[in-house]
Image (cartoon, rainbow, N blue to C red; front, side):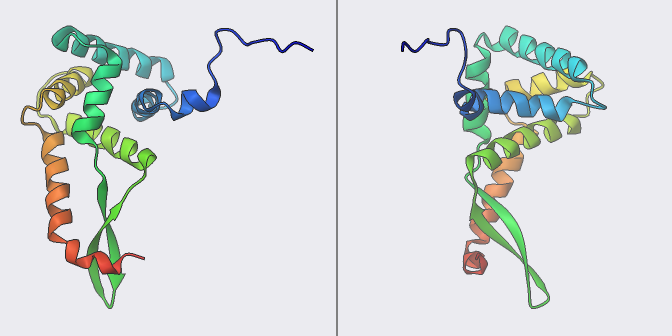
Length: 159
């Protein structure tokens, strides 16, 4: 019995475990409103077209730079003990890290005060993040890291 090879088929595990597709699909999920996936795809394609035009790098490189620049390894969790709230730094998984990267990116693009369409604000935020220029997303990551360093004495509350 001869086993036939499957041609041009991507293994589902490899497809889902790839960081590129995870970040891309999560970005798409954040952009979908009222089930309009086609509209979200158009917005995402416009964003990546503008970013590729300005930076002259591929989508995979853009997303890997975003992951490197915005990737957190620690997040703060609230723990209520004895009537007080303590912020406790705790390590996070890869999926949570990807989720936080996309969430920080989208929220900082929404905060931009420019009177431009959302896709232009998002592309500007991505460009400034990849080039490590001052922007809201990098400020947010630095604030989280500073808070984690301040509250490292509360680490014994983690369980």
